[in-house]
Length: 143
Image 1 (cartoon, helix red, strand yellow):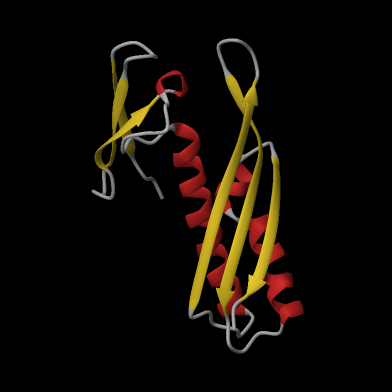
Image 2 (cartoon, helix red, strand yellow):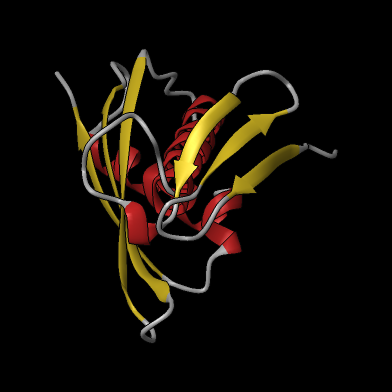
């Protein structure tokens, strides 16, 4: 399987931004900015946020598939991925950790079964396996 996305960067790291496009149409020229220009306002994202979104989505899919295989189909899974980044040097930063916080509605599952499947999903998530960083997990069942 091959998936494609592209980014076109214009201008300097402080004033510049890119247009991010997924070739399947899910992203259509969405604005992405560098950390030097991130000021907390506007509708632009940055690379850490894109990684968080990809990890949250990938983990949710892995958890859903694992729950289905275990005989506990979920009716809802909400995952938030929080990316922690620290200065690596004056010019760059590195991701030092990711926290996956998941709340799921899984009517047939007991908490212990759910936690077992969630830990397996964390280990087997394709995006999580990509990183050389600590990935933590908080998992809760919703009534």
